[in-house]
Image (cartoon, rainbow, N blue to C red):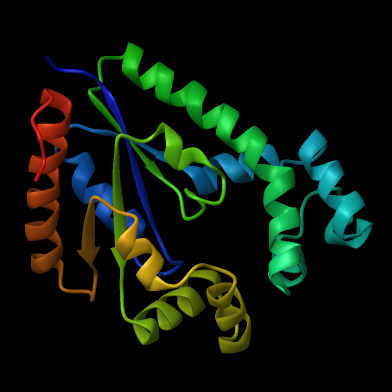
Length: 208
């Protein structure tokens, strides 16, 4: 008996989850980007943004009242305690909106909805997933990707990297691990294998 499932796609920052999701999307799956949802819940004037300002300081806001994301990141990733505080404020609303979008995708007929979320476990959203993919990459590659993607210094990039769980955690807590060293041929081969596993889970077949 076939049934629709939620697939969590996670891994350390800079591992390349977005690329993997784009490749998996070609197999007919819906994709929800948790980072885009996070940007939505922290828009100017939102209750979440006001709570963040109370917790991390009013000066994380720009003059127009919008969020200064670089400043928030600098403060939130300063220590594990600060990162936990950030997550406790943002995760509940992010999770609510993701579940709303998941239900919408199921209503549209999608059998698998991929949720791209680096904080999949920290938010507790992993409990909603029937299949979990961890994307991993060498540290030096992740570092250069983060610096280029976010336009930040090596020090700031390493600070963000250190705020996450280590690679072994993601390997141990996944149904499948995708290695992303930048070789697109290898990525496509691993994605094809993963798509077959997802299809097995949808159809109710046992995955060994």
